[in-house]
Amino acid sequence: MKYPCFAAALPALCLFSIASAALPVDYQARAEYSWTENIGRASGKADFRDAAAYETGFTAGTSRQLAPGLSGRLQLETAGYVCPDFEELNRATLGPRAVVSKKFGLGPEAPVLSAETAALARFADIDDSEGVTLHGAATLSKRIGPILTAQLRGEWQEHVADGATYSVHHRAVFAQLFADPFDWLRVGAGAGRYDGTFVAGASAARFGGALAGALGPKIANYYASIPTNVSGALQPGWTDYRVEGDVDQWWLELSPAVGDNLSFTLRYERAHATNIAGVEYRQDTFRLGVIYAF
Amino acid sequence: MPSAARSSALLAVALLAAAVRAGDLSALVRDAAGQPVADAVVSLAPLDAPAPPYAPDKHPVEIVQSGKQYRPYVTPVRAGTRVDFPNEDSVQHHIYSVSKPKPFEKPLYESGASESVLFDQPGVVTLGCNIHDWMVAYVVVLETPWFAKSDEAGRAAVTGLPAGRYALEVWHPRLAAPVRQEVRLAESGALEQAFELRLKPDRRVRRAPSGESKGY
Ligand SMILES: [Cu+2]
Image 1 (cartoon, protein in one colour):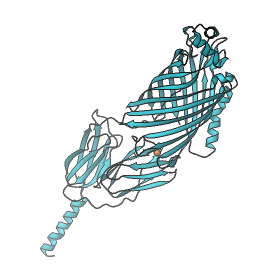
Image 2 (tube, rainbow over the protein chains, first blue to last red; image 1 turned 180 degrees about the vertical axis):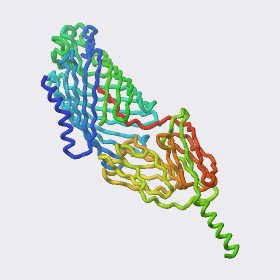
Image 3 (cartoon, rainbow over the protein chains, first blue to last red; image 1 turned 90 degrees about the vertical axis):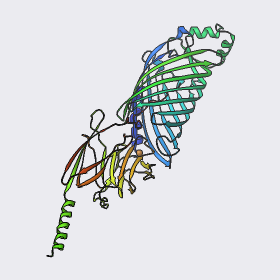
Image 4 (spheres, chains in turn red, orange; image 1 turned 45 degrees about the horizontal axis):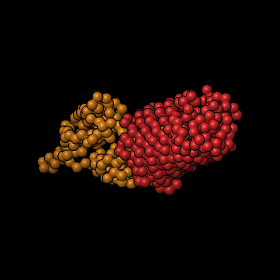
């Protein structure tokens, strides 16, 4: 476990580096409990494992107006993920993010187009998955009346990892809708599609079987051609492998707020992945989080 | 003293006395559930005589940007009043209004700086900050010097009113339309008025943080 103490020092590092630049800084801290079904992204029922995880995040940022209607934001962010049952999944990230937002007009209902880019270093128990995640996204937001907000988002991401299995990239588009039926409650729903390469996993027996043709020659040939890594993450011999494919994801979220700075999030997410060899699996995640803005 | 001169002198004294003699209006503003309503503006426009000319206040009227909010939320002023907007936050703020009586926009300004706006036309001016969408404030510009804003207990007191008839108006950000009625103030009279307002829900832009997608 080389990174937890480093991760613990990150918030202090963020605080210090931005505060020392004498800029008006805002901070956000979050903590989350999650329960993930099929945490190993396995396609065979026998390989399904469910697990709880704890995640914390901290962000320090500063915003400036660049031109009328155009604002810029720079932030440093860090996050840590701990899965007590499968410690090989533990990881942490740290890095800067820049956001430029253009608001077209005055008032809450004016549409906002923002573009962001981030470079996050990843530290993980699985050595081969360490590396840098490069991320870019564009989001168009529009408030519709006093209650609804609609968002369209497109993103691109590339993770340059130490091992080929974990060097993945994707493009994605999402549509999200939020409603604020009361000033203390936000309800949100969204759906999106990822297209690119992803890491999936299987027990040694199942992966070996697939390679031997148990799932047909097409899958055997495909799995023989892709990078793999025996990570032992979920059990001895557990194999991670990189596939090309797409993922449909949708989610529902309830977010009650207590005052101006504190909110809770209760979120259900479902992802359904299909790789180009036709193998499918799904993953469900329940999240219970708390966010505090300083 | 000739009698004509004496009677006109008496009349002048009587008029002066009438002008000096003043009444008070004390209002209690509640919502439909009987709870006190703060930030209601109670104003009285004279119907029998023109309102006295505007005399600028010695103390500047301020709406402060503090804690990423405008404080106070509601500010009643006489038409012709200049309002200062000092930024007491460490972050930049902006002010704009698209309201008919005073559309304007002040570009983003720094901590410690201040902007000033003259409100010369009567009406309600809604203020916003285009960076912090939840920031909102109201300037209620009135053509009468007689007005007050209700406190947390729902109480508003207007004092020093010459006797006569007035168009009384109660305004609140959550009222669909102001409550209007005619009242008559007797010389040195004290009038108590209770108002029950049917308020719309308080729909403000959420300020609390929101979660984000975790990706895949
Ligand atoms: Cu602001």
